[in-house]
Length: 157
Image 1 (cartoon, rainbow, N blue to C red):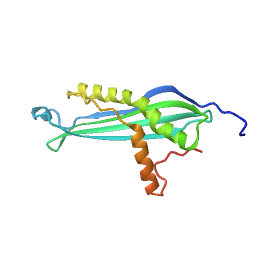
Image 2 (image 1 turned 120 degrees about the horizontal axis):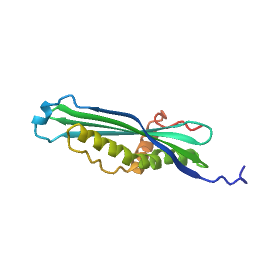
Image 3 (image 1 turned 135 degrees about the horizontal axis):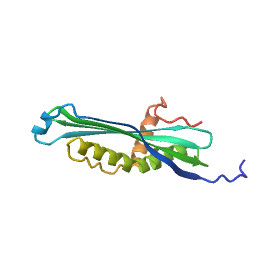
Image 4 (image 1 turned 60 degrees about the vertical axis):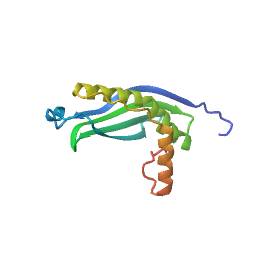
């Protein structure tokens, strides 16, 4: 087995919206208030092996809640997904690719969907700042090591 040289491959196969939601429960009265929202952004990724050919689905979930004076102005949820062919990469390296490289590709699509939904909902666009998925991955890894439950890591075998 050591004699075989496996070529590493990482290729995007498809990008798609898995789930999308926009709610603005306080409209139209929220438009009468001064627009100084408290914005909360929740970001999550998950991945699953979908076949034996090396295809993985990676889902980037972003939830944004904007509140004005304790009233929810809007709630946006986007699950941007992609299918990625990954071969010749295993273990920690595979987890790193699934947790950093794939979400970096998906993020601009999710950000554009969020901006469009906010504008169509009558609100200013939410320009999400770029996300350092490498730092988030390292943070999640450190938290997983601190809690030996093993939860949160994608199953790889």
